[in-house]
Length: 145
Length: 78
Image (cartoon, rainbow over all chains, first blue to last red; front, side, top):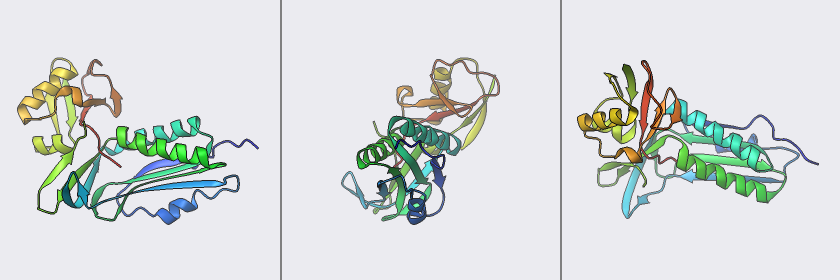
């Protein structure tokens, strides 16, 4: 049976803790045999330096618009039913979930591919910036080449 | 024309401002170069994207009086 995506998919910014359990509940769907979730987590090192915390800043209006566009593109490109994506802003300690992408599809190939597409596009397009705070007290904005 | 600029990330930090209103005659590239000189932005224009009124546009798009202009440094979400 061929089933269309449902209109509960979204991308949004969150100033507070990402509730992965609640987001995963939004992916429950009797048509879907595969649920893939990606948690991007703050790690304690980057480029050989010890990282104490990260602060994410967003151009919120455009970030939400661009994130929504990525979700719409993924729904058109892959045979998946539901996509939920959330990105943190603000100061995050090591170990905190910074971004979650969850995809539900009838089959696993599409779920994996769509999840990978969404996180890769978020990282390359959505106007969110990472300010790294190092263990030695220094901090810097990350602007990849 | 009068333009409303907003700054984010390293550009906000370098400018010491979240926003400013400027009078400018010319295109978006000359606006960026003018602000880069004034605020000591280190990123060259070709590493920065342009957003006008909440949408990403080409640097060649003409600016209009009252536009909200945002220079987007390379993003690093995720």
